[in-house]
Image (tube, rainbow, N blue to C red):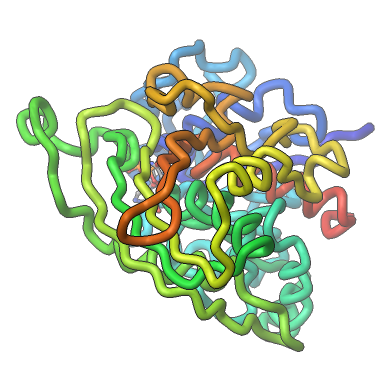
Length: 349
Ligand code: NAP
């Protein structure tokens, strides 16, 4: 099969580096363009990126020249890991010029005709693309993945909402340092510390799941009525966001029923055998001391959400702890899975 040429916007950043790493040897996609800010443009990728992945820079990428983020190169699809201060306008430029943009940034996530997509949860929301193309008068369009904390939470909420109808969610996150990009949080603020504030994070975690779990209705998504309250904290962990979650349901499941529903959950990527799809989107940990970032974040190449400590709550109905790899399932891996779904559903032809 001829590979689809893809570009990476924001290729030098924390998420951009993950794209480069995960797309090496991808069976469907081939990276042909790397873009970043004016500071990086014109340099080789090796010179421009402060490479922090635990693998070598792919040989084909090392000496590729970084370009400015202009929609003037040959590629059908672009993955975006751009800083949100610039992502809005640059991604619009690309989509209006006919490119298909799969973005990690917050800028377009809640727009009415832009799918906010997790392929296991709401693949039917791709139907919004038609009206977006019409608005743009272009074959191009934008599809987004949610915020890294939202991804883990929404994957766990979906099967539980389908089975027992969720009424409310209280979530407290313990988020890794890599979630703040590179160089991110100053070492003197991070070490030996917990920072109980991440700008705009709680708002994203409280609203994005409502669109993801919402219902497609003609040209828009009717938001889910679930009530969510989030408290987000930055902790001294390199990769992997941990979330403690308390759930109230319309029907009142036992912990054993919750375990069964989560462990059996599969979605379209598993059924279609998409290259980046984990066999199970959710892994239920039996050991009561799990999940832990160091032990569980890389299971299934960082694409599964690990859930443990599923038990009764004295305040809500059920409480549990989940872990999601923030730069893989929470960012670059999520976007690549979105790109794979677009290809499998023939949006790239
Ligand atoms: P980062 O490490 O700060 O990287 C930002 C990227 O944007 C770099 O490639 C940078 O290029 C580029 N950039 C900055 N200003 C630019 C400009 N004026 N024109 C063109 N490119 C510009 O950030 P990150 O953590 O990778 O996050 C990237 C995006 O993904 C953000 O929107 C973030 O919210 C989102 N996200 C991050 C995570 C995570 O876990 N880190 C998870 C989910 C979503 P230079 O190197 O040339 O400056």
